[in-house]
Image 1 (cartoon, rainbow over the protein chains, first blue to last red):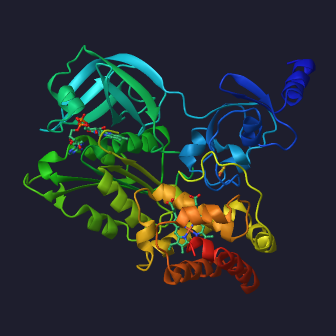
Image 2: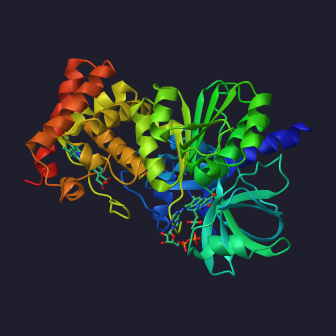
Image 3: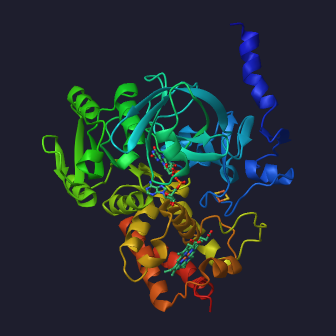
Length: 337
Length: 136
Ligand SMILES: Cc1cc2nc3c(=O)[nH]c(=O)nc-3n(C[C@H](O)[C@H](O)[C@H](O)COP(=O)(O)OP(=O)(O)OC[C@H]3O[C@@H](n4cnc5c(N)ncnc54)[C@H](O)[C@@H]3O)c2cc1C
Ligand code: HEM
Ligand code: FES
């Protein structure tokens, strides 16, 4: 291209340098002023605490422009990938557009498939255009009133639908409706995605431990395929899926097929009570099992999904076993979340 | 969360300035990231004090420990004595708890290969907020 236009593109950003777009208005930063200070000076309400880059109260999301490296110091790889930054530590060299919360997208989409995965869990597939990372979750709505979070088991770029695994909770407002009544062809409203539990490319050789209980498999099924199929992860991957009884484990043949075609993936299926004999299911306590499988978590990337108490307990166990906090991603399925 | 929408207060005076160099010498914010995992692991494994830190949300606690270390290392922060009182109020902290934390602070610094002189100035900062932390 002509030298004039390259001159212009080099010139323009610095000429309009350091303007911050936020909540529909534009603020010009003064010399060496942080995004936080500039926005506060302009009268915006931005939460903050230490102003020193350590408390993370002032975390915002960049929707346009470049984030200077110091503004992402201490954030997880997932947070960086989502464009999160600390406003107090951000003195940009060029214009940025920023937001307090990721703007949620709401779409209405048809159910295109519904399958029973086991006695309690139903698989729903929804045809929708949504930019997401495998392992994130969306809010699903029942008649626009009741909403619950469900993890994405599908992988963008591989599956042309969104997939959910929903466990029927007796007396549950959403899950019983989804399980008993929702049918192929029905439309459902969904909002999202959110969540920071997804594969981010940092080191393709890093060993990984993924552990899930019950429908905690849903996000892990997305994450493990994203790592292997979209990002050609090379390091060893241990996928541990657990349930109370062996009948509650599902997707076993799909997982075995995935493991046969990827020598770095090992799938471990464990249950507290094993009844169905011929399957490759071990009777074990999932905490002890993980402890024995990976006694030293140092250097591991860890993904933990499922019931709240399970996630908390195993997170602590993995941290004490040497995993860095920033390398542990977790989705706790808190009730009514 | 504690500290939201807080007015900016004038930074307190001397011990911080004295050890400001420790924060910088260690390498600033990235060093805190390295230190906080070591420190938090020690604290969680210590029965004398783990109950205070073994709470609902490990991530949030981890971030608070970062704030703690930044302050102890003399890094940039805006905590006042009043803030420190508020942050530790209702925990009924005693000398035993304080000493345990100080011990792990020193242990963490030693593990990172920090020299004795710098460790001493970090301890000076910790001691300077002791009364506030213990709400005495
Ligand atoms: C980030 C996130 C991701 C999630 N991903 C999934 C997913 O992929 N698949 C999935 O099935 N669920 C997932 N959940 C849980 C889901 O959001 C609902 O909480 C769950 O389906 C129950 O909703 P409900 O409306 O049927 O029950 P509610 O009407 O909310 O609750 C009915 C009763 O059941 C109790 N209860 C709620 N959940 C459970 C449970 N799991 N076991 C036993 N009792 C329960 C409640 O405390 C209440 O007493 C996720 C939650 C979060 C926060
Ligand atoms: C050595 C001096 C100490 C300093 C400089 C210090 C500093 C801090 C700071 C800066 C915070 C974060 C406040 C916030 O922004 O919310 C904090 C929180 C906390 N501190 Fe300390 N602290 C000290 C000693 C202790 C001791 C002895 C204990 C208990 C054994 C303790 C337990 C806690 C806990 C549990 C929190 C989190 C509170 C919450 O969850 O809101 N601290 N401390
Ligand atoms: S205000 Fe504490 S990290 Fe920005």
